Image 1 (cartoon, rainbow, N blue to C red):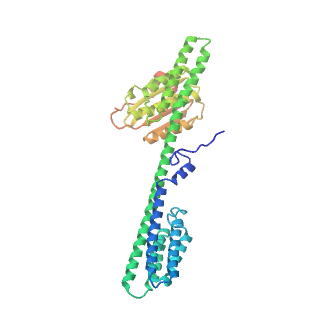
Image 2: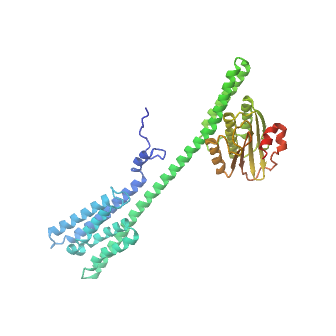
Image 3: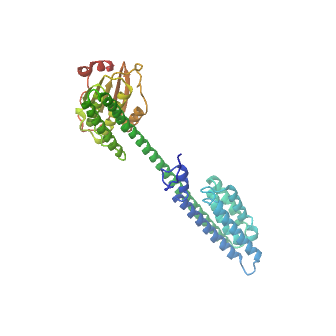
Amino acid sequence: MNQRHPNPFPGDPAAPPESRATGAEEGPAASARRLARRLAAAVTGCCGALAALHTARPDASSLRVSSCAALAFLIIFIQYEFGASGRRTGNAAHPLALAAQLLLTCLPLPWLGLDWALMCGPAAGAALLALPPGAAGPLCGLIAVPLLLFGGDLLPLARTCCAAAVVALVLHGVGRLAALTAQAHESRAALADRAVAAERLRLARDLHDLLGYSVSAITLKGELSHRLIPVDPELARAELASMLRISRQALADIRTLSSRYRKLSLANEARAAAQVLEAANIATEVDVKECESLPPATDALLATVLREGVTNIIRHSNAQKCVLRAYCRADGIHLMLVNDGVRAREGAPTPHAGAGIENLTERLAAVGGRLHARVSGDCFRLVAEIPVEGGIPACAAPTVEELNGGTGAISKSTAG
């Protein structure tokens, strides 16, 4: 029975979504929201303290002063808990919280007067954060209307309006900065998730390409050795030794999966493929001499295509003959693999299209190459094309007559 253990790194992109969500609560985005929340509470608290100090004149009643302090505390609490970047609402302000803050700010104005007017700043800042610009602007104007109703000296009124506007802009800037910071970290987390998914896909494709070929070759040589033991023990031992070499190579290949390009060589893989095919009693013609000095990435990719092609021949055909050619053209490098023993409808793309062919198609497309896989008669033709810029002289592709020199039946059936 599988048990799920808690991930020791909850913020890691490779962690399960629920673990990553838990870790996000302690991540940089949460820290930015927490800082914005505290700054907003501090600024609003300073405004409330100034309002209470202005209200606490010698002739002011205790009810007026205590009411001012209580209202300021309620506004701070609402903004801290439910406002933009609030502890319980994240990056979104609750509409009821905004309505409550506006009411607690505007309704006491006729009673508390200009002493309370500075609290219009936090209310306007909350409106700017919670509402779209088209609605926030008019609402801020409505908040300022009660201030214009106060008579008397215009200088204190102007100072109060300017101070409230500065407070509103500061709170809006702090809240927007926290929201943008959270979005940036969420985008980075999404990019990390994509990178992890791409790396997992690469590992899956590499495992398929590596182990598919190696396991097929080991199985083939194991069956051959089993049949040869009573007939020819020496040859059976030779096949077992070859099987051990393939298994060791597979282990070495698995250890290199951490690198982007494995150190595979088309020439080495062609020699190994010829041995495996000949062990399966498949007459093989190999010619890759023209492509023995390729760029490392191209060499590894063509070697991977060759491995998958040989694996498919062993698994999905009753081949008797096989031609393996690599040649240069002006547009790049071409690898061709042709075998008989296929039973499929004429013109079909491939009798065994699956993950291997799809993986190769994606790999080649990533470097601007193409993969052609077609059936003609009882033969299957696999051609990989990779563009290479400079450094490799172009030469002619093998003709039908050239192919007829080794395996005429194959070349004739694939010429069309």
